[in-house]
Image (cartoon, rainbow, N blue to C red):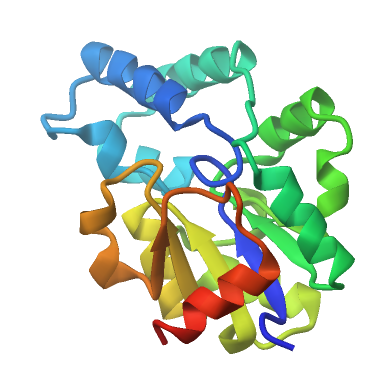
Length: 215
């Protein structure tokens, strides 16, 4: 059956938290400037250890960045995008396994699942930054998810919104669906097999039909 599994990024795909993360990172770079324009957009899809290593090499600054992120996440809500649960349920009803593949850490995921009772039940596997050594766009996270699900990554569909995440899915050999929730649709068309606005109204059958017309 195609898809053999559905692999989902979290923020900007399943839950509408990217605007809040943008605010958090905008506040961080006000205190600890990086000199990089649109920094919050540039790092989307990247694990925190990779961000700290690359852009905040000073240990004291790293500690303060982590503190600010923890404070921001502690106050964060986790609104599920409209239509997401209906699509996840359709996958479940069709016997197609699903995974969350996120650059977030286990602490945040524990907080999220506590805030959204029953949401964890949609997913057979959850991959966090604790499960991998290489950040997106490296394919390790999606290859790991496919391996744990016991499927070939080439038979999987990856749902992503960030450029790094889209490249990660592509590097893993998966079919890639881009959601235009974070970046404009036009900027995604050459980076994915299919571009959609969001998961609202999507079904397994409509997904397969749209992919047949594009790949």
